[in-house]
Length: 448
Image (cartoon, rainbow, N blue to C red; front, side):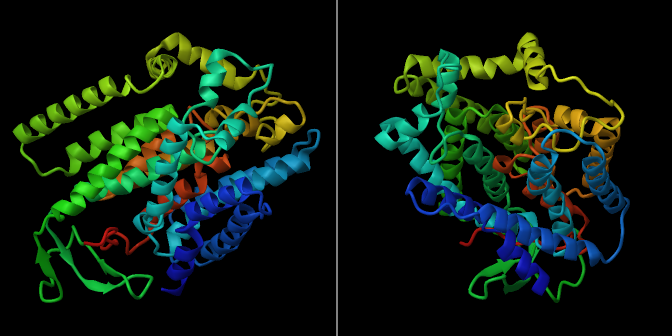
């Protein structure tokens, strides 16, 4: 329980920390290295958890092997300014993997880790919409400062002016909003029959319910509950989901928007207890509402914004555009050693400081060019282990959506090595799949 408490306070408030740090920066306050402190604290916790594994799975061995390979690869392969790259690679990629062992050992589950995203995400979303439509002077200055004469094309300017709230780019907000939306969607459909056991949460003044979908015995110790979530609670969740959907649409991070829609469909088909006829009616009404929202939304957005959003989304289904994107994300870089790659961390953000190409838009390409066939094979092996474990765990709906997000997102972004995309939380979520007691209970994330 102590380890779970430590993990909770170490991880669950991560987006509060990111939001506060950004607001402090905008206010001209000292730029404290809060994120670096956050990472190194959890590195220590992750190493401790790795040493305290109660039992070992094949996945544990593959993850450890992958971590060792990255370290050896980074040490053995030499390239200019290597140690600057390695430092960032350690804090932005290698250290994230240790979050797997925190989820694997601590007993903290993904719902608890996401539960404290509620207010910082809502604040960032509401403020983001306000800034997007009112365009305050500091916000416009932040946007214009990113435009240089070299890239001042109409398309690039439209990308810069996507909804991004307190940040210059929409990545921090979009990925956090998507992760929080999984908690909302799960809560919307979390009204089926279950048993509860009342206890206290990590904070003693909060009430939680442990749900059990598997065991059907020991009725004397638990009670069956058939109560659906209160209507007011469901309404609040729906309002938040509409807000989330609008923000993701205007932020135009396509993988986050795409996986948000996929997650809605997945939960609707998987967890909704309604009849087929009711599902058809709900689908029709939802489609009508979205169509009306798009129609009336066009009246309040400039034509250039509407055109950009339409073109940006339609490009997903354009094969030529997709091929062009993959050619662009490779940056015409030549791989020196296909087996071991060109060196761990060689194509992260630091490359831009040395006027080199940074592979930040395709994690698979980045992993292959940096660590070669060996590195990408180990990563795919880990993904296969996660997929097999998810197949065994029928009740891990949030984790399944996160896994789909990882697999799809790595083709569109540096999902596992970019600080603005919360790769550490993705590793943590996969680690919770192997916690032995997690099958039987998890926290109810919203209070009535």
